[in-house]
Length: 175
Image 1 (spheres, rainbow, N blue to C red):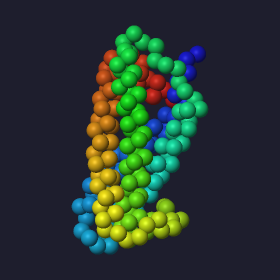
Image 2 (image 1 turned 120 degrees about the horizontal axis):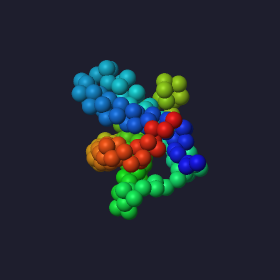
Image 3 (image 1 turned 45 degrees about the vertical axis):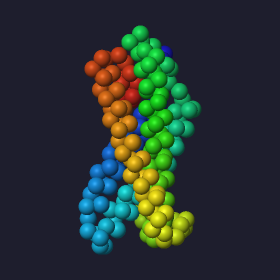
Image 4 (image 1 turned 180 degrees about the vertical axis):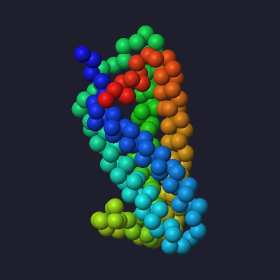
């Protein structure tokens, strides 16, 4: 029997996908709000989802390393497709981590604290420093734009394989 992705890997993949989309949408929403108390909740929610996303991605990587699926056995799946898929996945993982870390670091130097899901107050990692906040905010911004580009490439690849019905997408939809 062929080894597919595990159920936990599939579920984590889709939670991470939905969370990432939420983070993009919430960032545009929260930045459009006026500078007042109405920004506190959206920013805390965004930070909470981002920090949780980093933890979920760590868990996904652990699951993927422990339970590797069999390689794709299809003559239609060429070497360049394999290399592009590997690059895309590594880029997704790195960009998500860098996006989460740079967002947290920007927040750490903003003067605003972070409370995990309104239950655990994180200790201060930084101090209020406009230049460091802007540096990490810029890294966060450009990392997220790069992430969006790689997500588009990833989705385009999935759509391509779905229309070809070559079994690549079935590995991720198999529950």
